[in-house]
Image: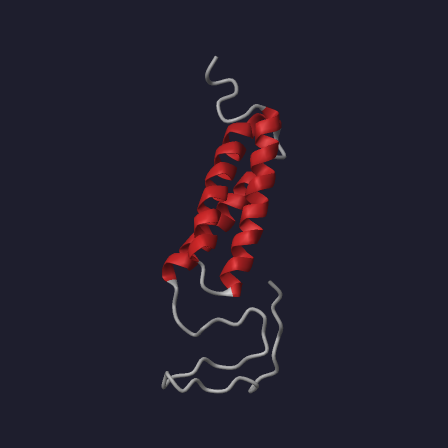
Length: 118
């Protein structure tokens, strides 16, 4: 699924709709409509990804990194499922990647219940 960047003005107005989408040359162009749920999911995934990634660098914080990573992966996956624009997908993939690294390192350091449940 390759995307191409068209020069501005190369799109023709659709005859079935009266309001055409703006023709921009940016890969991260939006459709001009608000998507509050997708943007919240993107922000939550990003915050959880940063939290999981940073806490994964410390061996004793494996509970935080593994849980934040797992929740970040699941949140990002749902966000990818309902995303509408390339910008949302880009942000979600970055958050999912950071969450996954934090999750896997947290699992390697002790896991979701390591040291709590014996």
